[in-house]
Amino acid sequence: MLTKPKKISNSAGVYIFRKGKTQLYIGKAANLKLRLASYFRNQSALPFKIQKMLHEATRLEIIKTSSEIEALIKEAELIKKHRPRYNTVMRDDKNYFFIGITKEPFPRIFTTHQPYRDRKVKLNFSGARYVGPFTSVTEVKTVLKLLRRTFPYCTCKGTHKRQCLNSQIGKCPGYCCTARFKIQDLTFKKARREYQRNIRNIAAVLSGKKTRLVSTLRRRLEKAAKAERYEDAARLRDEIRGLDSVFSHQGVLRAPQTSALWSETRPNLRSLFKTQKYISRIEGYDISNISGQEATGSMVVFMNGAPDKSQYRKFRIRMPAPPGGGNDVAMLKEVLRRRFGHPEWPYPDLIVVDGGQPQLGAALWALRESSLRPELRPRGIKNLESKKPIVTALAKREEILFLEDRRAIPLRKQDHAILHFFQRIRDESHRFARAYHHKLRTKHYAEA
Image (cartoon, rainbow, N blue to C red):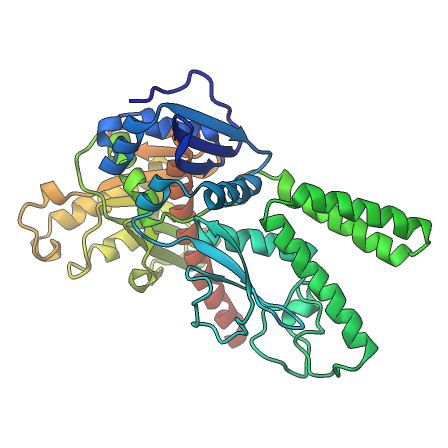
């Protein structure tokens, strides 16, 4: 079995497990050192497919990149070129995602896992171009959002007379989603050329030709400046700066746990918590208020690493706001007490609350209180102790995870997939609580 290399960079990049000259598996990472550590830590707990791949591998090749986005694009380029056997196997037999570009006067961009055959979206697929394959549709959509700031394009489903909101904020040129241009007009033809140029530039970036594109833009900028076409020069300058901005930042991609990633993350969680407990249902909690006014609480649910929004619950805090402001710990107690007052809801395997030791104590208090009342015990569970959830609290700034056994785990030192997973739970619970809080505040001011 392949042994862990002694020195691995903390940078973003792509890693390739090889058997001689044959590529077995190609993956990407925001932090190569943390990501690769998961392959060599407690290998017996890894899924059988990964163990088999590691047993066959004789060499590990690493390609460093300057950002996560470059790693994403490089991974897609190499997978398309080499088609490694284990990339298909370790994706749980699911297809990869591709970016499709329609053949229209104003082309549209869409994602699909069935290139050349997808008919879910009513677009002109005749002669559509496809870029990929990519391993995560969420990461791809994040990159498209970033690129759209530099190269605007339309996402409207049809034409309409008024300009869309995206055109008002600079994410859409505005021509393609209005019915006020005739195909013979010079304005239309110019708009179409500029629009198609934006699409070509996006396709070039996603195909790994970012360096060539930047060089081309710089040559055009010099020509425009010499010809005193200052508006064109300013636009080209902004495009170059936009590309540099997209590719210069680490940590812009936060992909959700796919089933394939979850098969790797679950054993790492069990190792982190020192438990053999099967972790499937995870609940995240947060409180949102301003000085105790219109306070709300949220419960978000992740099943096997993915959010299940049908099971999300929101709580309007009933306790009166104390003098001098809100008491988040007391509010969290109320939310969890009310949550465990629903024995008909599925029981969690893991609880993540936003905060530190005080919030952890509040969660443990609510759990103990519910266990003492027989009518609140979850249905169908005879041995409550064996089903007792793991309770944790995640502190924001330091990214420290507090556990019931008094351990404080710095997540930044863990595998990046673990850190990102807990961040996603916290961010989702925070978003859901704030959305309800803002709704209540808006209603309050409307009635005032």
